[in-house]
Length: 67
Image (cartoon, rainbow, N blue to C red; front, side):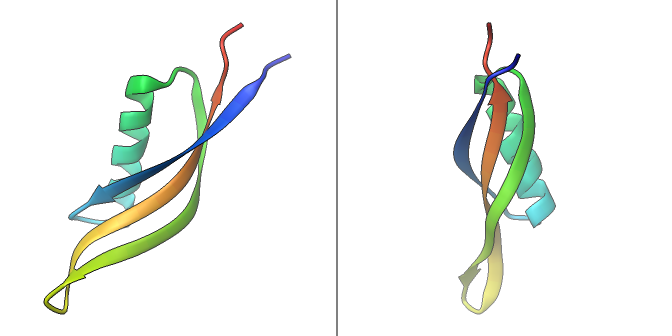
């Protein structure tokens, strides 16, 4: 039997939502072991001077705890 835990993280990118997700997962894997999935709870853009300046995603990352 496995036991999993969920943690919420935010990630940003100047390029796209997809890039923000990839950066968030990459960073999560640097501190968490056994990352299995992520649920994108929210996504929004940062606006500066009427232009999109950045992309932000809030996600819940699921990882399996060690035995």
